[in-house]
Length: 479
Picture 1 (spheres, rainbow, N blue to C red):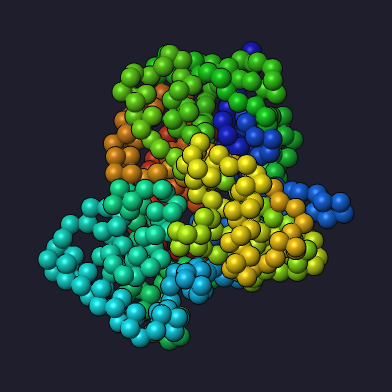
Picture 2: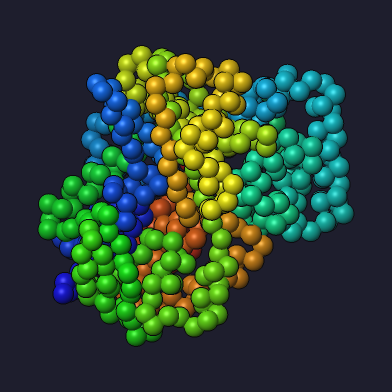
């Protein structure tokens, strides 16, 4: 029996940030991670091919924030291994590249006069319907049409969003727009094009630079693990909870599978960054039926990943590229070399391909070879590279990646939170822990604020983190 330690379930950004802040105050923690490596969805994977080593994050991760403390937090961990990277992100639509978000002059050149006039006309029509006639905005599709017009919305935003979530934009909650693209609309895009040269203080809709760890985002969390273990804290990988015993007000014990051996721990505090519905089902005794039902009704989108190593110096100069067209089965590709040259060997490169899927359906059930064959057909036809340049490929899968903001999710989530908030020594944090689509910096903030609450023996409000009213990717580069 291990007693009176802070136990953290999940070694993603939120959990590890919490552990680091507690370490600074000499508070011992036990971190439990089911994977073989810390970092959660921000981990960095390494693939050794003879004398060559390739590294990749699980998708594109870049760091920007409005919180200077976060920059200092990471710089303390990485020291000089912290790069400033020029951002380049594009979409490939109908065979033509568009900067992301779409820039008016570039779009005009690619689309031509008639399509552009049609999009402007559609936008004016949307203004009449939603602002003059006051049509109510009920869902994500309404929001996009009201801010961009139907034609431009269908051109790149609505179809890509449906590709990510696997459901109609009419069934996606308005929260998704409010959180991810608040303040981004056709007027702001035009204003950026027309006045950016003359107004240095014009708000940015997207940062054009970001910070990135030299050897991958996962090195942040690996550095935390090394640091806290010097203080007699413990980090267990390949480990997971089997049940959490409680009395309706307090978490009493946790039964854990630690590398195949069963252990019981008695926490002073429990911090959970595992999926919130998994947490609910680990509780013993089980919560009331309405809570279990609400947990079942929270849905997740999964991903299938294909990592390809190449005998090629470079594919593009993009950090990542989006593919809104539904006939292309993957949604995004990332070339890690364009984040840091140390992610690939000299004269080699790699490509990380992401499929947005539903667990146990469709692409999820394909074999590794079938997934590669499906992708390479399109990658070759797009002119990115030839199959003859491929060295090796690797396939892996992740469930519970994206919380789905359907029209009913708020109601189910509120029911669960009301129940969990009754536990005096339980904190649930991070994207999976709160069923909230947060970026890396917001998950870090949650972990840091939670640690502050543990130190001060109080609970801080986490609801506002990651829900700023401006565009979600707006941020600043540390000066």
